[in-house]
Length: 107
Image 1: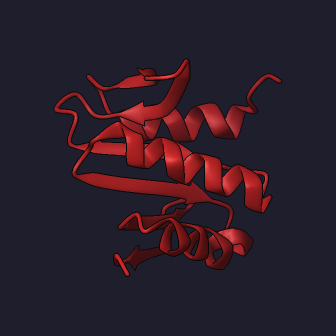
Image 2 (image 1 turned 90 degrees about the vertical axis):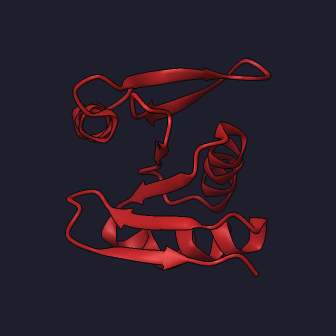
C-alpha cells in the first residue's frame, strides 16, 4: 500500500537533511527514517492498530540506534507507549505534528 503524504512528510522531517528514509534492516524489513549519524531511528505508524504498533516497535529495536522514536497520531499515543513498554523498548512517543512527546522507560 502506498504511503500517505503526511506519512512521507513525517519520514523526511525525521531523517533530517542528510539522513535516510526507508533504511534497510535485516530480514527484508525497512525503517521509516534514520539520521545521518545513525543516532536516532524513527518509525511512523498512522493506523493505530496494536499489531502494527508492535511491528513498528520491533523495527525500532532492531535498528540499533541510541534514540528510538515512534510517531503516531495524537489519539494513539497511549497505545503506542503501551506497545513500547510491553516490548521492553525504551524511547519516545511523539504525535505527528511534534507538539506532544512522551518518554517510555524500560521495565
